[in-house]
Image 1 (cartoon, one colour):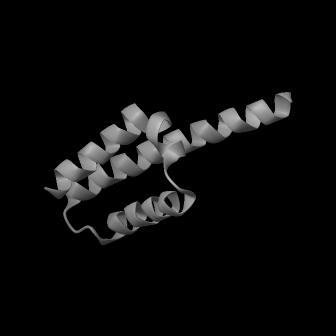
Image 2 (cartoon, helix red, strand yellow):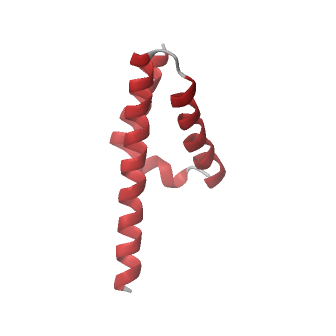
Amino acid sequence: MRTLGAVLLRRLFANNFEEFWPQVPAEIQNGVKEQVLILVQEENNPAVRKKICDAVAELARNLIGMHKIIYTWILKV
């Protein structure tokens, strides 16, 4: 069940990130980031930990992409 949860979270980050993440309050965003990192550290099952890492990587990829777009836009202004 935890494996499925991690896979679905990664898919959400991969496919719908720009639609839902900006609408999530900053406090919740920070909580999600903290909790997924804690999950990576505390998960004992290697297969589940890998799926959680995949979700973390997708979150990081999207956050870096968002920041690059914002900084590029600011520099052009």
